[in-house]
Length: 203
Length: 315
Image (cartoon, rainbow over all chains, first blue to last red; front, side):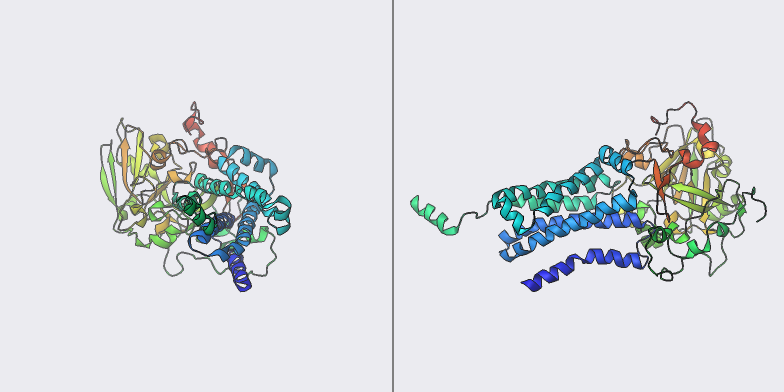
C-alpha cells in the first residue's frame, strides 16, 4: 500500500515537473504566463475531479483502499490551485493589489475562481488526522462537503473565461456533474446484515 | 542610420539580435538566474534558403519605432479558428491551406467588379513594409512588420458607387483545407467588415507578407487585411471575397456574442470587454503589462473618423 501512495505522489508531481521542464527548455510558447496560468488551472480542475471520483469508485467499483489516497489527491488539487493563484498574483498582475481587487470585484469569472480558492483553504487546513478528531467526524464531513460547491465554481470559472470554444469546460462540467450526481444514487449505507434483519422482520 | 527623424528603420535594426534569436525577455525579467542562455535555439526566420518576396520593400512612414515581435512568436501564437481554437493549432495545422492558385473577388455596390488573381494583386501597387502594433481583444499585443499596400489601391479600382457604405470581407471556408471548419464554433465563413471610410483609410493595409516574405499560412495567406487601430479579429485573413454593401455587414464575432464584440471594435482602454479589462496589455516577449493606447496608438490618424460618435455605444 505504501508503495502505491509513493507512486501516486510522484505521479501527482508530473504536471508541475512538465511545466518546469518546459520553462527550462523554452517550451512555454510565445505567452509563457498565459500558458502557466492555463496549465495550473486545468490541473486544479482535474485533481478536483479525481478527488471527487474516489467515493463513487470506492462504492461502485469495490475499491475501498482508494480512500487512503483521497486526502493526498485533495491536497494536490489545493497545491495546483496555489500555483494557479500565485501565477495570477505574481506573474500576471505582478502584485498590483488594486488591480487584483478590481478584478475580483468586477470580473465574474475571477470572482468565482477566487471564491473557489478561498473555500479550498479550510479544507486543506483541516485535512490532518488531528483536525478530524478535533472537529469530530460528523462536523468534519459536513465541512468537507464544500468540495462539491468548489467543483461547480471551478467549472463556472473556466466556462466564463473562454472566448467561444467551451469544449473543455463542457467536458469538466459533464465529468464533475456526473461525479456529484452519483452521490445522489442509492447505495448501501447500512450494514448488510441489519438490512437483512429488517427485511425478515417485515415478513 | 544618421537621421533620427527618419521613420525609415529596418526591422532587423529594431529587433535586437539577442531578442530575435535568443531567449525571451520573460525569462530574464522573471529573474530566474538559470544558466540556459544557449538552450533556446535560433528562431525560425523566413528566407534563409530562398530570396524573400518583398526584399527591399519601401519603408513606410506609418511604421512604429518599437521592437518587432520575433518571427517565431508571430508565426506560432495565432488566433485562426479555421484551423482550431488553440493558439498553436494554426502553426501546426495550416499547412493544408493552398495559397496558390488564389482568387479574390471584388464585387457588390461598384461599377467594376473583378476577380483578381494573386499574381495580379502582387503587382497591383508598390508593396511597402509597415511595422504595426497588433492588439488582440484577449489582452496581448505584438509588433509586426507587414508587407502590403493600402487597401484603397484595390478598392478604388472597383469604382464603388454611392450605395457602397460598407466593405465586407469573407474568409475562405473550405473544410478540405481548414480542419476547424468542421466545428461550428463560429458561423462559417468568417466575415468581417469596415465602414467604407475606414476601409479607404491609408492605414488599412491589404497585406501579402510579413517579415519581408509571403504570408505564412497561419497568418492568413495569401491575402488579408490589417487594420491596426482595431482589435485583431477585425483584420480578416485568407480573404476570397470583398463586397461593397449598403448595410452594415453581419460580422462573425458580432453574430456570435453581440454584447462582447461590436462592429467597430476599435482598441479602447476605456471600454472593457464585459468579462475582462482592456486597460492594459501584455506585449508578447515582455514580462510586465503596458497601458493600452486609445486606437492602439493610431488616434492621431484615425480619431477623426469617429467624431461625434459615442464609442461606448459603438464599441
